[in-house]
Image (tube, rainbow, N blue to C red):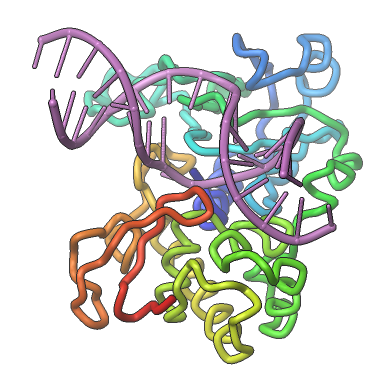
Length: 289
DNA sequence: CACTTGACCTGTCCGC
DNA sequence: TGCGGACAGGTCAAGT
């Protein structure tokens, strides 16, 4: 799923919805999705309150008053959807929205709060996970130790951005920008969108990219991600926010999933190719190899 | 180390 | 309609 803008959208939604809630429990029938034992849940979740909802890269962190946190990765098809008591029990909601259908066959973890609301972790492909662990240990996870800087941080500069790529000089720019240890949070959608914005072909070797091009890529990546957050993220397929609603960034996409359509800048037909093992969308006129 | 590829899963879509 | 294969927003563990 979910790249930085989608995870950030979920984070903002959950912050409004669950901070201060009193946890009653959590259940899962999919060990891979939630490896913790019932004993862990009893000791560190039941009776706790939610104190904060944070994000690092594409990882969500739900902090509890026990100094434990839920560390959550949505991977490709994960969803975190909150359902309040009214939607759970109200017969007066005859619409077909997702919240009225939960849990469903993709529900892997169900968390319950004292006010009869629930938080569902759904994940069709089971790549994602929820892990309960001490808050203080999160930043020692191997992923957290190697992940790069947050691209939307106010302190993050174009020069820092460019320098992060030095290590990956011999690969193509698409593989490098998808590398979470270079910059955090970039996935397939925003890689293609930002490279189109910066007029850089995804197959270009990192070592061939000029300082001016890196500067433009930095600007475009931030612009595209900020716009997506404003639009509630991209709902290409499965993604929904904490209220089960889709985001509209795909309506504003310039190349992603637009193969066969005209480039918004020059009118040339957009092509789809394979770069770094991922479906990749380019304007063959604007983005020259 | 840096780099590439396959694996992890389920579902959908497309061509025969 | 059925069936096989490719593909899907992400990371890892293996290979070279």
